[in-house]
Amino acid sequence: MLTLKGVLRQYRHDFQGALQEFARALTLDPSYAQAHAWRGAIYLVQADYSAARKECTALKQLGRDALHGACLGLTQSYSGDLPAGYETLRQALAQARSTASQLWLLTRMGEVAAWQGQTAIARQHYQQALALGQDDIYLLAAWSDFLLDNGQAADVVKLLSSWESADSLLVRLAIAETLTGSPKAAAHVKMLADRFAAARARGDTTHLAEESRFELQVRKDAPTALRLAQENYAYQREPRDARVLLEAAVVARQAPAAQPVVDWLSASQFGDLRMKQLAKELK
Image 1 (cartoon, rainbow, N blue to C red):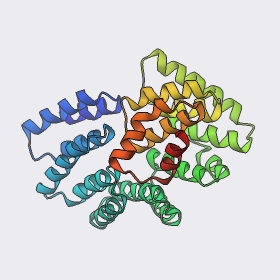
Image 2: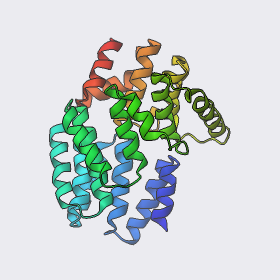
Image 3: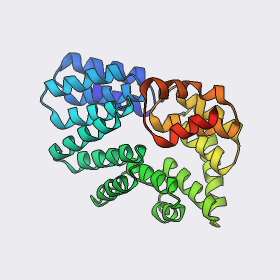
Image 4: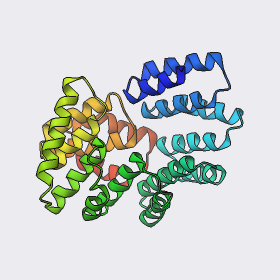
């Protein structure tokens, strides 16, 4: 029950509350691996890599080799060592038994390969994940972003045409439709505007990064996009959140707004080629 409460709090971005629930769960059962895994995931979102590594170590000590590899591989990648992170994830994939674990690892390997500019390898991993036949929103979002980065907006329109119910995917669909001049774009833009307005009314901040992308790439409102990206980065500091802030700052020509990301890139030596280029443009 405590872990379920923690997961629900995590989904609402109440990260401190979630960490407290997982800590209580571990007090009752120090060998509960899922609580360590969730804590590691939250620390990665917060860019607290030292704390994340401790959770990875705990998973190793519990003999959960696949979970340990997933945790450590992502921690290595986020903290700047993409080649080592990729190799650790690859080894974890060889140990993964469940389809869910395999899908997650293949998706993450696709991301790490793409960050290094290894487009063909990234494409292969995403396609392997898709071939598992599971509907997974994170995979579809990551694959869509990859396609958009590689000038394949038309493919994103086809991929996400039946995913209007998921806000994060609808944003990517609207971006792709805007790029391709689809007649369906206007309806999806209105749909998203209504959903984001409703989210603000109820105090829901779970999709600030997506809303920032919507304002920047669809509505072309750079100041609003930048404000939303800054608000999001105060809570979530994963690489994709950093990129959203960089992109908004570049278009808005507000380099100081993205200084936290520039500092993180410098300190971590995170090797994403696109973000490095964005940071250069800010200068």
